[in-house]
Length: 288
Ligand SMILES: C[S@@+](CC[C@H](N)C(=O)[O-])C[C@H]1O[C@@H](n2cnc3c(N)ncnc32)[C@H](O)[C@@H]1O
Image (cartoon, rainbow, N blue to C red; front, side, top):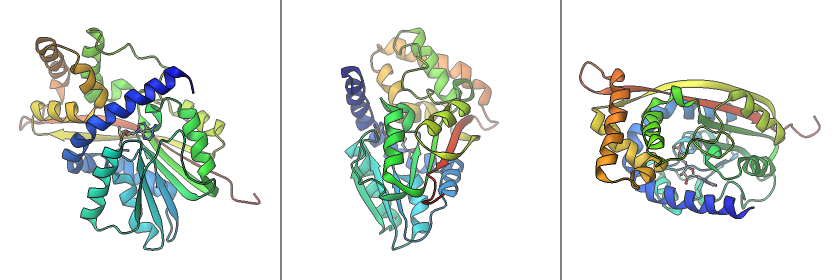
């Protein structure tokens, strides 16, 4: 790994460590709004009783927790994230749910410290595109999956279909607080093209690849609530805002408000569309 990549990983870890409390705070509405994506992913891996399922970059762990009842008491979900603070949020949620078939691990998706062919399925929602070396993470995922293993993942669709993030990000880019997105660098929108994503899965050795765009919406009681949630959850946006003085940060907020105004509901709330790209792939069964 180059110095640049390990520096990016270090910054990434620090940024998500700081965001962990916010992910705990907004866990319930986030779970609700994003459940179509999690359900698609869990159906794609089709977990069976007794299987071992690994969730990478699990954050608060919600997608894996949907799979946990399907693998039953003799199955194991390994809920993992690079950030110990995120793993703590997931652990608390599993306790709340009374799940007893979950193990928790601090794991970097690019160097998965698990035996080869040791899990039946891998889930990774909105994780791979953030990693310094997504290709390495996909190859590692392939390595830990056994024959007939399945992978399901989600990335974000193009920025114009995700104005909840694009609106503040464009303001921050205009003020040099965020870099102009480099399509080849890791980032929220770096795996937005379904065809290119399918190619990457194929390069990592997956077969029977399917991809789909999946729309959903996020509801807020007011613009103020949207802003609070975005600052708590969208770690790169929060970090960039922190580099601005109060006046410039307020301009970013008002710029985002003017773009998102079109999604105002009759009761003064906001209903903002979002779009994910979901993908699934398999490893051939032995002897095929
Ligand atoms: C956008 S959040 C998504 C959390 C969760 N998967 C969800 O959909 O609710 C991104 C997560 O990826 C994790 N992450 C980023 N880079 C990682 C890496 N190299 N290995 C493991 N986790 C990573 C972060 O710590 C963070 O929890």
